[in-house]
Length: 397
Image (cartoon, rainbow, N blue to C red):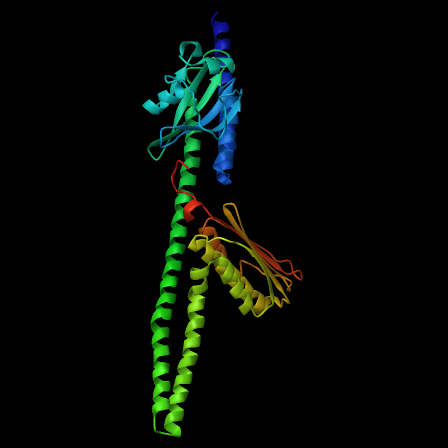
């Protein structure tokens, strides 16, 4: 009996070690996904697969609690039923079930037999008998839960404790996404503040300094016409007026570079067409943007096209540049392609680096394809959200 008992204990310990080792392998796989910066959605799907493989014999789900009191099913693996709709509201769950219990208590919960739960029939029809749910806390807030269900009787009593490491990984993913969203929102605010400052400078130059200089020119010309003096004095007055006119032209060019007035007044399409007309290289332009976009998006696209046209004129030896811009759904796509010598390196070019920073600060993407001898293509996409906003930094998003 003692020998048999020792052998059984040894076999159980060995099985326990194998299970622990398998769990660590699963956790390492998930940690690698997080380290690679995979999207949260992909991690949620991977988590449900690993949790089901480790603990369940039926289903595994990741569920998020919304601020309005509803719940959303973010990922699901295993038995499917009519009540399972990934990406949609997790509705119809029993008032005394795991979803409601975890929401009320913020602590792990279990159901050993759905026959004992009022409203548990959908789970029974889906082949489930028992389930365990463990909460996910992000920054001291109950964010959601991971649930695992079995059709083979009650789950082991240590399931909640073992699942904690998986919920911690999900909390890390959500916190990282929250931090990235906050950083993106902060960068977007900085870009918007910078653009607003530039717009005010342009407005001050136009309404202040330029108007005063125009007024001085008119006064000088009136003095010159009314003057009884002839010769050098009158000529000098006319020369001063001409110099002031040149200063006004310089100021207009400077203010256009700071912030184009046509962009503020008329929008992206006329502004890009004006850029094309002023370009030193012939431009074929196709702008399919018919409505006004958020100011920062318009400014970002304008700066991108302006910088790329300047590069094409200075460095590319291009004979023609093609500019395409299209607002499609919630995205503005801009592509600028020239037939020049290629070889543009975004790493070495400070202008392209600055453009990449600006576009990415607005939540967009920026790419350069420039093989030597085959021209350069620069593409960028900018998100255009409802109301002119950008992806929210809230952890529930």
